[in-house]
Length: 343
Figure 1: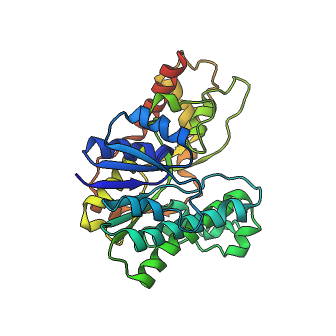
Figure 2 (figure 1 turned 30 degrees about the horizontal axis):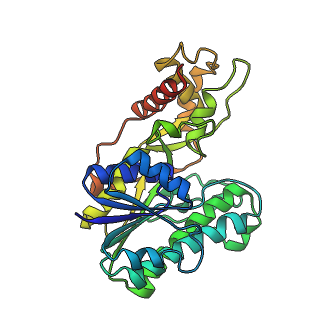
């Protein structure tokens, strides 16, 4: 039975990763920042095949050293943890530096002490691909984005920008470090990077359905609380079910075809009007106070996005996953919210 290290194991994506790993009979070591978070996970997973270790700050030098030294049995490392917020407060210190340092430390520790490490998979983001146009807010008519595309926002520009641009830049700079490390150090383990778009889907455990549920899950959560006189925002883009993102991480450690690849994950378009439509389709009584919006604009909100012409045919061919449909994904999110809140 192989052992997998999962960083940031209490995160939205990481909990699904851990759950699927355990279902496939892997042993899992998850890093968490506090003992309380570790105990919460251990209680939810409730199996001796899961254990947690505390890494209070992923950005500190040697943050993962002790984990690898104490657990030489680790064969796979899924580095899922990374700062994820769009705060405008000191973006260089709160977004750029932690994202880059966390990636550097994970790679360094794995290289120095991962005696039996075979593969390291890093969770990046679609944000690292093709978002250079954010700097001047001009989107080329012929923009084409695929697994070879890169966001190129200089560090000094990002450090003076808002939280969203800084977040996008942080993902690109952190991922660049992965491939630079591979070229520079020629590690004995293989590297793969997973680049999802917006990640939706149910929480791994009902106990994580809270008042605020993180940056992406919160979009649907917030819409379910809208009152009839409130207007939804105009957020839109591409998305993928969290369970498929978790599955892609596991395929990445199991299939050699993933070695050295960037896996671009998206399966559908979304808009807030689209979410409103699905809320009223699946749970009209439970959310009868939620505004209907303008259903006749749905098609325009889905197709008129600022994401560009995106292609992930190479990723789909490698993974060969049967992804959750967009409707099923949203329905499962709503079903969990209704169940937990007794609506």
